[in-house]
Image (cartoon, rainbow, N blue to C red; front, side, top):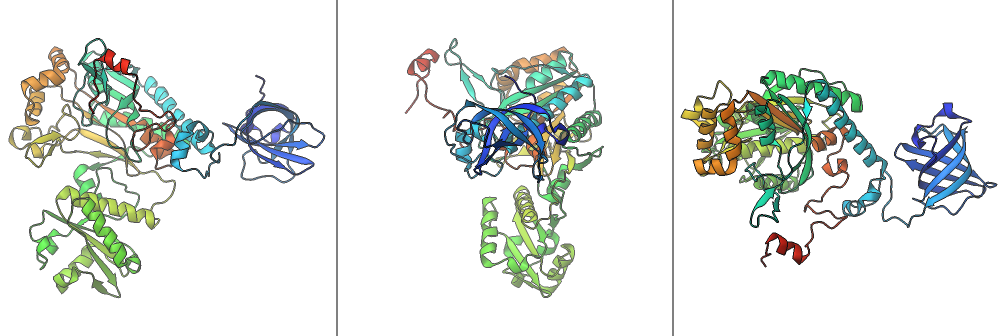
Length: 573
Protein backbone atom coordinates (compact mmCIF):
# COMPACT_ATOMS: atom_id res chain seq x y z
CA UNK A 1 0.00 0.00 0.00
CA UNK A 2 1.38 3.38 -1.00
CA UNK A 3 2.90 5.52 1.77
CA UNK A 4 5.58 8.19 1.35
CA UNK A 5 6.14 9.16 4.99
CA UNK A 6 5.22 8.37 8.56
CA UNK A 7 2.98 11.08 9.96
CA UNK A 8 5.17 12.10 12.90
CA UNK A 9 8.33 12.58 10.82
CA UNK A 10 7.12 15.50 8.66
CA UNK A 11 8.87 18.82 9.38
CA UNK A 12 9.13 22.38 8.03
CA UNK A 13 11.71 21.31 5.44
CA UNK A 14 9.03 19.09 3.86
CA UNK A 15 6.88 22.08 2.83
CA UNK A 16 5.54 21.74 -0.77
CA UNK A 17 6.25 18.01 -0.76
CA UNK A 18 3.54 15.71 -2.10
CA UNK A 19 2.84 12.98 0.45
CA UNK A 20 0.68 9.93 0.90
CA UNK A 21 -0.07 9.16 4.53
CA UNK A 22 -1.87 6.36 6.39
CA UNK A 23 -3.30 6.13 9.87
CA UNK A 24 -6.18 6.47 12.28
CA UNK A 25 -8.39 9.53 12.73
CA UNK A 26 -7.53 10.75 16.23
CA UNK A 27 -9.80 13.78 16.03
CA UNK A 28 -12.01 15.53 13.48
CA UNK A 29 -13.08 19.19 13.74
CA UNK A 30 -15.65 20.55 11.25
CA UNK A 31 -15.54 24.35 10.98
CA UNK A 32 -17.90 24.52 8.01
CA UNK A 33 -15.70 25.62 5.15
CA UNK A 34 -12.70 23.86 6.66
CA UNK A 35 -12.28 20.42 8.21
CA UNK A 36 -9.29 19.56 10.37
CA UNK A 37 -8.27 15.95 10.96
CA UNK A 38 -5.57 14.77 13.36
CA UNK A 39 -4.09 11.71 11.67
CA UNK A 40 -2.25 9.32 13.96
CA UNK A 41 0.17 6.47 13.33
CA UNK A 42 2.82 5.05 15.66
CA UNK A 43 5.26 7.85 14.80
CA UNK A 44 2.91 10.63 15.93
CA UNK A 45 0.16 12.96 14.75
CA UNK A 46 -0.03 15.34 11.81
CA UNK A 47 -2.86 17.77 11.07
CA UNK A 48 -4.76 17.34 7.81
CA UNK A 49 -6.55 20.39 6.36
CA UNK A 50 -9.54 19.72 4.08
CA UNK A 51 -10.88 22.66 2.07
CA UNK A 52 -14.59 22.79 1.19
CA UNK A 53 -13.87 22.16 -2.50
CA UNK A 54 -12.20 18.84 -1.70
CA UNK A 55 -14.76 16.04 -1.63
CA UNK A 56 -14.26 13.55 1.21
CA UNK A 57 -16.22 10.53 2.42
CA UNK A 58 -17.88 10.32 5.83
CA UNK A 59 -15.05 10.15 8.40
CA UNK A 60 -15.25 9.53 12.13
CA UNK A 61 -12.80 8.94 14.96
CA UNK A 62 -10.65 5.80 14.62
CA UNK A 63 -11.47 5.30 10.95
CA UNK A 64 -8.39 4.10 9.06
CA UNK A 65 -7.76 6.40 6.11
CA UNK A 66 -5.27 7.16 3.36
CA UNK A 67 -4.53 10.84 2.68
CA UNK A 68 -2.86 12.28 -0.40
CA UNK A 69 -1.88 15.94 -0.18
CA UNK A 70 0.78 18.62 -0.02
CA UNK A 71 2.73 19.72 3.04
CA UNK A 72 2.17 23.40 3.92
CA UNK A 73 3.48 25.76 6.58
CA UNK A 74 1.00 26.56 9.36
CA UNK A 75 0.05 30.16 10.01
CA UNK A 76 -0.02 29.49 13.76
CA UNK A 77 2.38 26.71 14.88
CA UNK A 78 1.27 24.17 17.50
CA UNK A 79 4.22 23.89 19.89
CA UNK A 80 2.74 20.80 21.56
CA UNK A 81 3.26 18.69 18.43
CA UNK A 82 6.55 17.67 16.83
CA UNK A 83 4.79 18.30 13.49
CA UNK A 84 3.27 21.53 14.78
CA UNK A 85 4.89 23.84 12.22
CA UNK A 86 3.21 22.15 9.25
CA UNK A 87 -0.05 20.64 8.05
CA UNK A 88 -1.03 18.57 5.05
CA UNK A 89 -3.57 20.06 2.64
CA UNK A 90 -5.62 17.09 1.48
CA UNK A 91 -6.23 16.43 -2.19
CA UNK A 92 -7.80 12.99 -1.73
CA UNK A 93 -8.95 10.91 1.23
CA UNK A 94 -9.83 7.21 1.04
CA UNK A 95 -11.49 5.31 3.89
CA UNK A 96 -9.74 1.97 4.32
CA UNK A 97 -11.63 0.77 7.39
CA UNK A 98 -14.54 2.04 9.47
CA UNK A 99 -14.80 1.97 13.26
CA UNK A 100 -17.56 1.88 15.84
CA UNK A 101 -17.54 4.38 18.68
CA UNK A 102 -14.76 3.21 20.98
CA UNK A 103 -15.43 2.45 24.69
CA UNK A 104 -12.52 4.67 25.73
CA UNK A 105 -10.72 7.85 24.76
CA UNK A 106 -7.61 6.93 22.78
CA UNK A 107 -5.07 9.47 23.97
CA UNK A 108 -2.30 9.73 26.55
CA UNK A 109 -4.88 11.02 29.01
CA UNK A 110 -7.75 8.55 28.82
CA UNK A 111 -10.94 8.36 30.84
CA UNK A 112 -10.91 4.56 30.98
CA UNK A 113 -10.41 2.51 34.11
CA UNK A 114 -7.65 -0.09 33.90
CA UNK A 115 -10.17 -2.95 33.62
CA UNK A 116 -11.59 -1.34 30.49
CA UNK A 117 -8.13 -0.72 29.11
CA UNK A 118 -7.20 -4.38 29.61
CA UNK A 119 -10.46 -5.66 28.11
CA UNK A 120 -9.93 -3.54 24.98
CA UNK A 121 -6.16 -3.76 25.01
CA UNK A 122 -5.95 -3.58 21.20
CA UNK A 123 -7.48 -0.11 21.47
CA UNK A 124 -5.38 0.84 24.49
CA UNK A 125 -2.28 -0.02 22.45
CA UNK A 126 -3.11 2.83 20.06
CA UNK A 127 -2.44 5.34 22.84
CA UNK A 128 0.86 7.14 22.10
CA UNK A 129 2.14 6.67 25.66
CA UNK A 130 1.84 2.88 25.47
CA UNK A 131 3.41 2.81 22.02
CA UNK A 132 6.33 4.89 23.29
CA UNK A 133 6.79 2.42 26.16
CA UNK A 134 6.83 -0.60 23.86
CA UNK A 135 9.23 1.12 21.45
CA UNK A 136 11.57 1.88 24.38
CA UNK A 137 11.31 -1.74 25.53
CA UNK A 138 12.25 -2.86 22.03
CA UNK A 139 15.30 -0.57 22.12
CA UNK A 140 16.38 -2.04 25.47
CA UNK A 141 16.33 -5.52 23.89
CA UNK A 142 18.17 -4.22 20.82
CA UNK A 143 20.90 -2.82 23.08
CA UNK A 144 21.18 -6.22 24.78
CA UNK A 145 21.65 -8.04 21.48
CA UNK A 146 24.23 -5.55 20.25
CA UNK A 147 26.19 -5.30 23.47
CA UNK A 148 26.36 -8.96 24.41
CA UNK A 149 26.96 -10.12 20.82
CA UNK A 150 29.93 -7.73 20.72
CA UNK A 151 31.26 -9.03 24.05
CA UNK A 152 31.55 -12.69 23.15
CA UNK A 153 28.19 -13.96 24.38
CA UNK A 154 26.26 -16.66 22.53
CA UNK A 155 22.46 -16.48 22.40
CA UNK A 156 20.93 -19.87 23.25
CA UNK A 157 17.29 -20.81 23.84
CA UNK A 158 16.48 -23.08 26.79
CA UNK A 159 13.45 -25.39 27.18
CA UNK A 160 10.00 -24.11 28.08
CA UNK A 161 8.75 -27.59 29.03
CA UNK A 162 11.05 -28.76 31.81
CA UNK A 163 11.25 -30.54 35.17
CA UNK A 164 9.57 -29.02 38.21
CA UNK A 165 12.34 -27.93 40.61
CA UNK A 166 12.08 -25.84 43.79
CA UNK A 167 12.94 -22.21 42.94
CA UNK A 168 10.94 -20.20 45.46
CA UNK A 169 7.53 -19.78 43.80
CA UNK A 170 4.86 -22.21 42.64
CA UNK A 171 5.39 -23.74 39.23
CA UNK A 172 2.90 -23.58 36.40
CA UNK A 173 2.39 -27.25 35.57
CA UNK A 174 1.72 -28.76 32.13
CA UNK A 175 0.22 -32.30 32.13
CA UNK A 176 1.69 -34.89 29.79
CA UNK A 177 -0.77 -36.59 27.44
CA UNK A 178 1.67 -39.40 26.74
CA UNK A 179 2.67 -40.08 30.36
CA UNK A 180 -0.52 -39.81 32.41
CA UNK A 181 0.09 -38.49 35.92
CA UNK A 182 3.37 -36.83 34.94
CA UNK A 183 3.86 -33.11 34.48
CA UNK A 184 6.22 -30.66 32.91
CA UNK A 185 6.75 -27.29 34.56
CA UNK A 186 7.09 -23.93 32.85
CA UNK A 187 10.47 -22.45 33.84
CA UNK A 188 10.64 -19.94 36.68
CA UNK A 189 14.02 -19.07 35.17
CA UNK A 190 16.61 -20.83 32.97
CA UNK A 191 18.83 -21.20 36.06
CA UNK A 192 19.77 -24.89 35.80
CA UNK A 193 20.11 -24.88 32.04
CA UNK A 194 22.40 -21.87 31.90
CA UNK A 195 24.69 -23.40 34.49
CA UNK A 196 24.73 -26.63 32.47
CA UNK A 197 25.81 -24.57 29.46
CA UNK A 198 28.82 -23.44 31.45
CA UNK A 199 29.64 -27.09 32.17
CA UNK A 200 29.10 -27.60 28.43
CA UNK A 201 31.91 -25.14 27.71
CA UNK A 202 29.96 -22.28 26.05
CA UNK A 203 31.59 -19.81 28.51
CA UNK A 204 29.31 -16.84 27.79
CA UNK A 205 25.57 -17.27 27.27
CA UNK A 206 22.64 -14.88 27.03
CA UNK A 207 18.98 -15.15 26.21
CA UNK A 208 15.84 -13.02 26.17
CA UNK A 209 14.08 -15.64 28.28
CA UNK A 210 10.39 -16.11 29.07
CA UNK A 211 9.76 -17.09 32.71
CA UNK A 212 6.63 -18.16 34.62
CA UNK A 213 5.82 -17.99 38.33
CA UNK A 214 2.49 -18.80 39.96
CA UNK A 215 2.59 -16.24 42.76
CA UNK A 216 0.53 -13.40 44.17
CA UNK A 217 0.66 -10.34 41.94
CA UNK A 218 1.23 -6.63 42.50
CA UNK A 219 1.95 -3.50 40.48
CA UNK A 220 5.47 -4.62 39.47
CA UNK A 221 4.87 -8.36 39.07
CA UNK A 222 3.25 -10.59 36.41
CA UNK A 223 2.76 -14.38 36.17
CA UNK A 224 4.77 -14.45 32.93
CA UNK A 225 7.70 -12.16 32.40
CA UNK A 226 10.93 -11.75 30.49
CA UNK A 227 14.53 -11.80 31.64
CA UNK A 228 17.71 -10.70 29.95
CA UNK A 229 19.46 -13.81 31.22
CA UNK A 230 23.23 -14.31 31.30
CA UNK A 231 25.88 -16.73 32.55
CA UNK A 232 29.68 -16.53 32.35
CA UNK A 233 32.62 -18.82 33.11
CA UNK A 234 36.11 -17.96 34.43
CA UNK A 235 35.13 -14.46 35.60
CA UNK A 236 35.13 -13.10 39.16
CA UNK A 237 32.46 -10.84 40.62
CA UNK A 238 34.23 -7.59 39.74
CA UNK A 239 34.58 -8.65 36.11
CA UNK A 240 30.92 -9.67 35.85
CA UNK A 241 29.66 -6.42 37.37
CA UNK A 242 31.90 -4.37 35.08
CA UNK A 243 30.45 -6.08 31.99
CA UNK A 244 26.89 -5.54 33.23
CA UNK A 245 27.57 -1.87 33.97
CA UNK A 246 28.67 -1.48 30.37
CA UNK A 247 25.31 -2.81 29.21
CA UNK A 248 23.38 -0.48 31.54
CA UNK A 249 25.46 2.50 30.44
CA UNK A 250 24.77 1.75 26.76
CA UNK A 251 21.07 1.15 27.39
CA UNK A 252 20.36 4.34 29.32
CA UNK A 253 22.32 6.43 26.81
CA UNK A 254 20.76 4.97 23.67
CA UNK A 255 17.16 4.79 24.93
CA UNK A 256 16.65 8.02 26.89
CA UNK A 257 19.95 9.89 26.49
CA UNK A 258 21.00 9.57 30.14
CA UNK A 259 24.70 9.20 30.97
CA UNK A 260 25.27 6.69 33.76
CA UNK A 261 28.52 7.18 35.63
CA UNK A 262 30.44 3.95 36.13
CA UNK A 263 31.69 2.13 38.09
CA UNK A 264 28.48 1.99 40.14
CA UNK A 265 28.78 2.13 43.89
CA UNK A 266 28.24 -1.00 45.97
CA UNK A 267 26.32 -1.24 49.22
CA UNK A 268 26.37 -4.13 51.67
CA UNK A 269 23.02 -5.77 52.34
CA UNK A 270 23.47 -4.99 56.05
CA UNK A 271 23.87 -1.27 55.31
CA UNK A 272 20.86 -1.26 52.98
CA UNK A 273 18.64 -2.86 55.63
CA UNK A 274 19.95 -0.88 58.61
CA UNK A 275 19.92 2.55 56.96
CA UNK A 276 17.21 2.28 54.28
CA UNK A 277 14.97 -0.52 55.54
CA UNK A 278 15.12 -2.38 52.25
CA UNK A 279 17.35 -4.72 50.25
CA UNK A 280 16.48 -2.52 47.27
CA UNK A 281 17.06 0.95 48.74
CA UNK A 282 15.91 4.14 47.06
CA UNK A 283 18.80 6.47 47.83
CA UNK A 284 17.56 9.51 45.91
CA UNK A 285 16.48 11.19 49.17
CA UNK A 286 18.16 11.46 52.55
CA UNK A 287 15.69 10.02 55.09
CA UNK A 288 17.54 7.20 56.84
CA UNK A 289 16.77 4.73 59.60
CA UNK A 290 18.75 5.11 62.82
CA UNK A 291 19.14 2.81 65.80
CA UNK A 292 17.64 3.98 69.09
CA UNK A 293 17.75 0.73 71.07
CA UNK A 294 20.58 1.89 73.35
CA UNK A 295 18.61 5.07 74.10
CA UNK A 296 15.12 3.64 74.59
CA UNK A 297 16.04 0.43 76.45
CA UNK A 298 16.45 2.69 79.51
CA UNK A 299 12.95 4.18 79.16
CA UNK A 300 9.97 3.24 81.30
CA UNK A 301 8.04 1.79 78.34
CA UNK A 302 7.76 -1.98 78.85
CA UNK A 303 7.46 -2.62 75.09
CA UNK A 304 11.08 -1.54 74.61
CA UNK A 305 12.61 -3.70 77.35
CA UNK A 306 12.98 -6.95 75.43
CA UNK A 307 12.70 -5.68 71.87
CA UNK A 308 15.12 -7.29 69.44
CA UNK A 309 15.37 -4.10 67.38
CA UNK A 310 14.31 -0.48 67.96
CA UNK A 311 14.76 1.90 65.04
CA UNK A 312 13.41 5.30 64.03
CA UNK A 313 13.15 7.74 61.14
CA UNK A 314 12.73 11.51 61.16
CA UNK A 315 10.17 12.96 58.75
CA UNK A 316 10.73 16.67 58.07
CA UNK A 317 8.08 19.35 58.40
CA UNK A 318 4.91 17.26 58.82
CA UNK A 319 4.17 17.70 62.54
CA UNK A 320 1.36 20.19 61.92
CA UNK A 321 -0.38 17.82 59.48
CA UNK A 322 0.04 14.70 61.64
CA UNK A 323 -3.46 14.45 63.11
CA UNK A 324 -4.88 11.65 65.23
CA UNK A 325 -6.35 10.15 62.04
CA UNK A 326 -2.93 10.16 60.39
CA UNK A 327 -1.35 8.55 63.46
CA UNK A 328 -4.02 5.84 63.52
CA UNK A 329 -3.26 5.15 59.86
CA UNK A 330 0.46 4.82 60.61
CA UNK A 331 -0.25 2.41 63.46
CA UNK A 332 -2.49 0.32 61.17
CA UNK A 333 0.33 0.20 58.64
CA UNK A 334 2.69 -1.11 61.33
CA UNK A 335 0.27 -3.91 62.14
CA UNK A 336 0.26 -4.99 58.47
CA UNK A 337 3.99 -5.62 58.92
CA UNK A 338 3.33 -7.82 61.95
CA UNK A 339 4.28 -5.22 64.55
CA UNK A 340 2.21 -4.29 67.59
CA UNK A 341 2.22 -0.60 66.81
CA UNK A 342 4.29 2.47 66.00
CA UNK A 343 5.51 5.31 68.20
CA UNK A 344 4.78 8.75 66.75
CA UNK A 345 6.43 11.78 68.35
CA UNK A 346 5.89 15.38 67.19
CA UNK A 347 8.41 18.15 67.82
CA UNK A 348 6.83 21.61 67.80
CA UNK A 349 7.90 24.80 69.55
CA UNK A 350 10.82 22.93 71.14
CA UNK A 351 8.45 20.46 72.80
CA UNK A 352 8.22 16.73 72.10
CA UNK A 353 4.69 15.35 72.27
CA UNK A 354 3.06 11.97 71.73
CA UNK A 355 1.75 9.02 73.69
CA UNK A 356 5.27 7.73 74.36
CA UNK A 357 6.62 10.95 75.84
CA UNK A 358 5.40 10.12 79.38
CA UNK A 359 7.80 7.16 79.37
CA UNK A 360 10.80 9.24 78.26
CA UNK A 361 12.78 11.37 80.68
CA UNK A 362 14.39 14.63 79.67
CA UNK A 363 17.77 13.05 78.90
CA UNK A 364 16.24 10.39 76.64
CA UNK A 365 14.24 13.04 74.78
CA UNK A 366 17.41 15.09 74.26
CA UNK A 367 19.29 12.07 72.92
CA UNK A 368 16.45 11.23 70.51
CA UNK A 369 16.43 14.75 69.11
CA UNK A 370 20.20 14.71 68.66
CA UNK A 371 20.57 11.30 67.01
CA UNK A 372 17.64 11.97 64.66
CA UNK A 373 18.75 15.54 63.77
CA UNK A 374 15.19 16.58 64.60
CA UNK A 375 14.12 20.14 63.77
CA UNK A 376 11.05 22.09 64.75
CA UNK A 377 8.02 20.78 62.84
CA UNK A 378 9.45 17.27 62.35
CA UNK A 379 8.08 13.96 63.56
CA UNK A 380 9.87 10.84 64.78
CA UNK A 381 8.50 7.39 63.92
CA UNK A 382 9.74 4.60 66.23
CA UNK A 383 9.28 0.89 65.57
CA UNK A 384 10.32 -2.07 67.71
CA UNK A 385 10.26 -5.83 67.22
CA UNK A 386 11.89 -8.33 64.85
CA UNK A 387 14.72 -6.81 62.78
CA UNK A 388 13.27 -7.51 59.31
CA UNK A 389 9.77 -6.30 60.19
CA UNK A 390 11.02 -3.09 61.78
CA UNK A 391 13.30 -2.32 58.84
CA UNK A 392 10.71 -3.11 56.18
CA UNK A 393 8.05 -0.96 57.89
CA UNK A 394 10.27 2.09 58.30
CA UNK A 395 11.70 1.55 54.82
CA UNK A 396 8.17 1.61 53.40
CA UNK A 397 7.24 4.73 55.39
CA UNK A 398 10.37 6.66 54.35
CA UNK A 399 9.46 6.05 50.69
CA UNK A 400 5.81 6.96 51.28
CA UNK A 401 6.71 10.31 52.82
CA UNK A 402 9.39 11.02 50.21
CA UNK A 403 6.75 10.72 47.47
CA UNK A 404 4.20 12.79 49.36
CA UNK A 405 6.69 15.54 50.22
CA UNK A 406 8.23 15.70 46.75
CA UNK A 407 11.70 14.79 48.01
CA UNK A 408 12.52 12.77 44.89
CA UNK A 409 13.84 14.86 42.01
CA UNK A 410 12.01 13.91 38.78
CA UNK A 411 13.88 12.24 35.92
CA UNK A 412 16.79 11.16 38.10
CA UNK A 413 18.28 7.68 38.04
CA UNK A 414 20.22 6.29 40.95
CA UNK A 415 21.91 2.94 40.31
CA UNK A 416 23.84 0.79 42.78
CA UNK A 417 24.77 -2.80 43.51
CA UNK A 418 23.61 -4.42 46.74
CA UNK A 419 26.12 -7.11 47.71
CA UNK A 420 27.01 -9.51 50.53
CA UNK A 421 23.54 -10.89 51.14
CA UNK A 422 23.07 -13.64 53.74
CA UNK A 423 23.26 -17.04 52.04
CA UNK A 424 20.43 -18.45 54.17
CA UNK A 425 17.22 -17.27 55.79
CA UNK A 426 16.52 -18.80 59.20
CA UNK A 427 12.87 -19.74 59.55
CA UNK A 428 10.81 -19.61 62.74
CA UNK A 429 11.16 -23.38 63.23
CA UNK A 430 14.96 -23.07 63.22
CA UNK A 431 15.47 -24.55 59.75
CA UNK A 432 17.10 -22.73 56.85
CA UNK A 433 16.02 -21.77 53.33
CA UNK A 434 18.16 -20.29 50.55
CA UNK A 435 17.80 -16.51 50.26
CA UNK A 436 18.52 -16.66 46.53
CA UNK A 437 18.81 -20.28 45.39
CA UNK A 438 20.76 -23.33 46.64
CA UNK A 439 23.51 -22.96 44.02
CA UNK A 440 24.71 -19.53 45.22
CA UNK A 441 28.38 -19.52 46.24
CA UNK A 442 29.37 -18.38 49.74
CA UNK A 443 31.93 -15.60 49.98
CA UNK A 444 35.46 -16.93 50.64
CA UNK A 445 35.63 -14.96 53.90
CA UNK A 446 32.51 -16.59 55.38
CA UNK A 447 32.45 -20.08 53.79
CA UNK A 448 33.90 -21.66 56.97
CA UNK A 449 30.66 -20.80 58.79
CA UNK A 450 28.90 -23.52 56.77
CA UNK A 451 30.27 -25.92 59.39
CA UNK A 452 29.92 -23.59 62.39
CA UNK A 453 26.94 -21.22 62.06
CA UNK A 454 25.11 -21.05 58.70
CA UNK A 455 23.33 -17.82 59.70
CA UNK A 456 26.70 -16.01 59.41
CA UNK A 457 27.44 -17.17 55.85
CA UNK A 458 27.34 -14.39 53.26
CA UNK A 459 26.74 -15.04 49.57
CA UNK A 460 28.59 -13.89 46.48
CA UNK A 461 25.28 -12.47 45.25
CA UNK A 462 24.57 -9.07 43.75
CA UNK A 463 21.39 -7.16 42.91
CA UNK A 464 21.24 -4.14 40.63
CA UNK A 465 18.95 -1.56 42.25
CA UNK A 466 17.59 1.42 40.31
CA UNK A 467 15.43 4.04 42.02
CA UNK A 468 14.31 1.60 44.69
CA UNK A 469 13.51 -1.26 42.31
CA UNK A 470 15.43 -4.49 42.01
CA UNK A 471 16.06 -4.46 38.26
CA UNK A 472 18.16 -7.61 38.22
CA UNK A 473 20.16 -9.98 40.32
CA UNK A 474 22.61 -12.82 40.21
CA UNK A 475 25.52 -14.51 41.92
CA UNK A 476 28.64 -16.55 41.58
CA UNK A 477 27.67 -20.24 41.61
CA UNK A 478 28.94 -23.18 43.62
CA UNK A 479 31.16 -25.38 41.46
CA UNK A 480 32.66 -27.56 44.20
CA UNK A 481 30.71 -30.77 44.89
CA UNK A 482 31.64 -30.92 48.57
CA UNK A 483 30.47 -27.37 49.18
CA UNK A 484 27.22 -28.04 47.27
CA UNK A 485 26.52 -31.08 49.46
CA UNK A 486 27.04 -28.97 52.60
CA UNK A 487 24.52 -26.40 51.37
CA UNK A 488 22.00 -29.10 50.51
CA UNK A 489 22.37 -30.61 54.00
CA UNK A 490 21.87 -27.22 55.68
CA UNK A 491 18.69 -26.81 53.63
CA UNK A 492 17.47 -30.15 54.97
CA UNK A 493 17.58 -32.00 51.65
CA UNK A 494 18.11 -35.75 51.84
CA UNK A 495 20.06 -37.70 49.23
CA UNK A 496 16.72 -38.86 47.87
CA UNK A 497 15.42 -35.26 47.67
CA UNK A 498 18.57 -34.15 45.86
CA UNK A 499 18.39 -36.98 43.36
CA UNK A 500 14.66 -36.44 42.69
CA UNK A 501 14.79 -32.65 42.40
CA UNK A 502 18.25 -31.99 41.00
CA UNK A 503 19.61 -35.41 39.94
CA UNK A 504 20.57 -34.60 36.35
CA UNK A 505 21.98 -31.25 37.42
CA UNK A 506 24.12 -32.57 40.27
CA UNK A 507 25.39 -35.44 38.13
CA UNK A 508 26.74 -32.95 35.59
CA UNK A 509 29.01 -31.45 38.24
CA UNK A 510 31.00 -34.69 38.31
CA UNK A 511 32.53 -33.99 34.91
CA UNK A 512 34.60 -30.86 35.37
CA UNK A 513 32.76 -27.66 36.31
CA UNK A 514 34.32 -24.25 35.60
CA UNK A 515 33.98 -21.40 38.10
CA UNK A 516 30.98 -19.46 36.84
CA UNK A 517 28.37 -16.90 37.70
CA UNK A 518 25.52 -15.02 36.14
CA UNK A 519 22.75 -12.50 36.39
CA UNK A 520 19.27 -11.85 35.05
CA UNK A 521 17.78 -8.41 34.39
CA UNK A 522 14.02 -8.17 34.64
CA UNK A 523 13.14 -6.73 31.23
CA UNK A 524 9.76 -5.42 32.38
CA UNK A 525 11.24 -3.85 35.53
CA UNK A 526 14.05 -2.23 33.57
CA UNK A 527 11.58 -1.00 30.95
CA UNK A 528 9.25 0.32 33.63
CA UNK A 529 12.04 2.36 35.20
CA UNK A 530 13.32 3.76 31.91
CA UNK A 531 9.77 4.58 30.73
CA UNK A 532 9.03 6.42 33.98
CA UNK A 533 5.96 4.43 35.03
CA UNK A 534 5.29 2.55 38.27
CA UNK A 535 2.92 0.02 36.69
CA UNK A 536 4.54 -2.97 35.00
CA UNK A 537 1.43 -3.50 32.84
CA UNK A 538 2.31 -0.25 31.04
CA UNK A 539 5.33 -1.93 29.40
CA UNK A 540 3.66 -5.23 28.43
CA UNK A 541 1.60 -5.51 25.26
CA UNK A 542 -0.97 -7.97 26.68
CA UNK A 543 -0.66 -8.14 30.47
CA UNK A 544 -2.68 -9.99 33.10
CA UNK A 545 -4.59 -8.24 35.88
CA UNK A 546 -3.95 -8.71 39.60
CA UNK A 547 -5.95 -11.95 39.50
CA UNK A 548 -3.64 -13.32 36.77
CA UNK A 549 -6.51 -13.11 34.27
CA UNK A 550 -6.45 -11.87 30.69
CA UNK A 551 -9.55 -9.69 30.54
CA UNK A 552 -9.39 -9.45 26.76
CA UNK A 553 -9.38 -13.17 25.95
CA UNK A 554 -10.97 -14.28 29.26
CA UNK A 555 -8.12 -16.69 29.99
CA UNK A 556 -7.96 -18.86 32.03
CA UNK A 557 -11.09 -20.81 31.20
CA UNK A 558 -12.36 -24.37 31.43
CA UNK A 559 -11.53 -26.73 28.57
CA UNK A 560 -13.38 -29.35 26.59
CA UNK A 561 -14.00 -32.50 28.74
CA UNK A 562 -12.35 -34.65 26.08
CA UNK A 563 -9.08 -32.74 26.57
CA UNK A 564 -9.12 -33.69 30.25
CA UNK A 565 -9.84 -37.32 29.38
CA UNK A 566 -6.88 -37.33 26.97
CA UNK A 567 -4.65 -36.02 29.75
CA UNK A 568 -5.99 -38.39 32.39
CA UNK A 569 -7.16 -35.50 34.57
CA UNK A 570 -10.30 -35.32 36.68
CA UNK A 571 -11.37 -32.00 38.19
CA UNK A 572 -12.40 -32.31 41.85
CA UNK A 573 -15.41 -30.30 43.01
